[in-house]
Length: 326
Length: 75
Image (cartoon, rainbow over all chains, first blue to last red; front, side, top):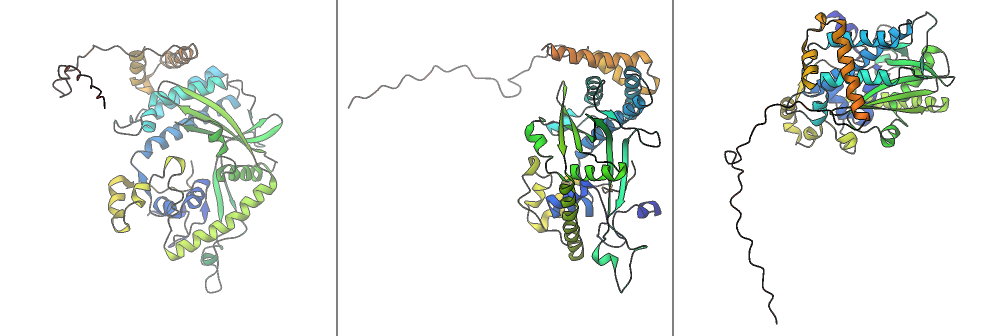
C-alpha cells in the first residue's frame, strides 16, 4: 500500500472502521451487512460488473463535458460534436460485452453508449433545467463534496483518554453531484442514471425514501448554502436498438433531512460494532431485492465453502473508495 | 447502414475527421427518426446460411400418421 492509497483510505488505519461514507457504502450497509463486508471490507467485485461501471462512468463524463461546454456559451451542435469526439477517444479501448454475459451486460455496447449520449442531449438541448453557475463563475457540474459530521466513531475517537487518530476523526460524508440546476425557480440536484429496466412509476418510487437522494439533497444545501428542494432523476433506459429517457422528481423537507442524519448515527454505530466484532451478519430478507443480490449464490452455500465460490465467481479488484477523487 | 456505423466506429478516434463525427451523430439521429416513425432499423443482410438440422441432430423424422382416434366404449 503506497502513501497515496493510505492517505485516501476511508477506514481508520489498522481497523475496519469506516469513517468516510458515501451513499454507495451507506447503501450496502443498510441493505445487508454481509454485502457491505464482501464489497467494502474484502473488495469482491463481479466479473461482469465492470461493463456497467464503465458504461455509467463514460455516460456521466460525456454529459459533464457537454454541460461544461454549454455553460461556457457553446451552441448545442458544437458542444455535442466535441462531447462525442472525446467520448470516442476515451472509449477506444472499450471492450464489447462477453457473449455469455447477462442481457443487461450485452446491451452496454460502445455504440449504445454513443447513441444514448446523442439522443439524451438532443432531447434536452432546450431543457428548462439550467445549470447553476457558482459564485466563482464555474458551472455546478460534477461537484465533489466532503463534509464532517459533528461526531465520530466511538472507539476510534477516544482510547486511553486521547484520540487515536490525528485530530479525533469525525465521520465524513462525501460523494459527487452530477449537476445542480435551477428549475421552475427552485434549485435541484440533477442525477443521471442508466438502467436496462423500464423507468416506470415503480422505478421512481424507489427513490422516496432513498439514502442517495437524501444525502445529495443534504450535501447540495451545505455546498450551496441554499434550500435545494430535492433531486431531478433523469433515467436513461438502454435497449437493444434504442434508448429512452424519463424524468422524475424527489423532494426532501428539512425534517426529513434531520431524520436522515439522526438515523446515520445509529447506522454508523452499528457498522462500528460489526467492525469491532469482525463479523457482518447476513440480512436474509434483502437477498431478493433489486432483481436479486449479486452474492445470493454465495450466501446460499454452506459457510465453509463460500470462499471457494467467491473466488470462482468474483475477483478482488480495487476496493470502492468514497474518498477517491474523480 | 449498420456496416457504415461499424466502419465509422472502428476508425481510430484520434484520426477521425469532423465529418466522421458528424456522420456518427447523423446516423444516431436517423436511427431515432426511424424509431419514432415506427420503422425497425434495418439489420445488416449477410449471406444467408442454411442450417443443417440433421447434423445438429434436430431433423424431424418423417411424420408418422396420427394415431387412430380412440373409440368410445359404450357401457
